[in-house]
Length: 505
Image (cartoon, rainbow, N blue to C red):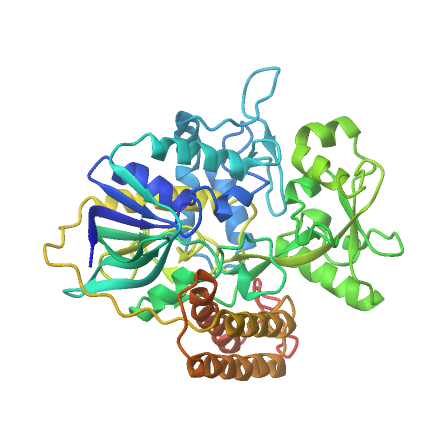
């Protein structure tokens, strides 16, 4: 079987993977495997921005405090401090690549927004399309780097082990077939999140939990998978399902109203619409259930039209296409799955519990987020730990043995994969969402185990990415449910109605 060899192998083409690739390329050759186009990742969908204490009235200490408060005290303090102290330099690194951020016309300093949970304005942004701009800059830089090779439309089927360490991956390359890829010094897992285990998510189609499942199969430790963040405000509209309305809109002054027109956040938290996401999402869920309605409303009608058009052009113009003029109309919104705060356990240098395997971005659990991610810390975390991982990987001794033989790839008929995936998504949405119960979690576990047995009974069929993603979706969903059952306190993003709230947290 044909093998491609590199010093460093990267799985995923979001900010975490590509920042690792750019730094690692200073020390050797890099191969990047991504299952869609290089530009298709969670990074490109991040509207709000990237948090950094770069304002005159701000400091890394305040950024650290806000992150710890949002994380409900479950954060790794060393990881948080490492993150926030690296933030200003990370912004400059991006600008050095050509990323364009909004500046204040009067003095040409960075224009800073504010989002829920932040005590200062510290969100560096490119209008309301920051993730797209960052992804554009890093992809362009990668394509200009001679010793980085990108393999698009390549689905990773397994991580390869030899001599007790991870040394590469097997992947189905579209139009070519199964190939092995060696990363003789290190393999970086940067595969993004798992939003597709739910029926409603802000994540792109590629977020099927592949990295969690791949890492679990070779013995890597996972942690905090129960902490699933739901974005409070996604558009409720049949023509634009799960379109995200950035938290920065609330940061700019938007308010939440129920079907009676009442601004209900007064009843839930003194921080009102700028409370952390878990608080706002649960408040919306409670209000919808209390009034038996299908959504709540985000009110921007008191804000100036010029501000909305200039600060949120993508949101403004997208909603206009479905006849919502946000300077005149309330925006119908509901919560949707948005981000996994748990993942593959890493240290401050992005090293997992498996030698040779690194992880960064949403697939990793660095300890930064604890029980709940502070808004706009995700892009920062991906960048800081991606680059830290590259520095550590450059110190690894290379694996000098042959490429391990990959296992045969088994797929089930696609029609059965559709049925099983939909079963997983319904189960997770019904029982493992914003509010959980003991009975619901037990029912979810039983149903997922039935679906896994169902999958294993299916006959072998021709390979398709959709079918190959299905066991990853199943295994990741099971990890989330098991972790939720094991968590015996209501803290951060985990809220079980059958547990007494621990108000001391």
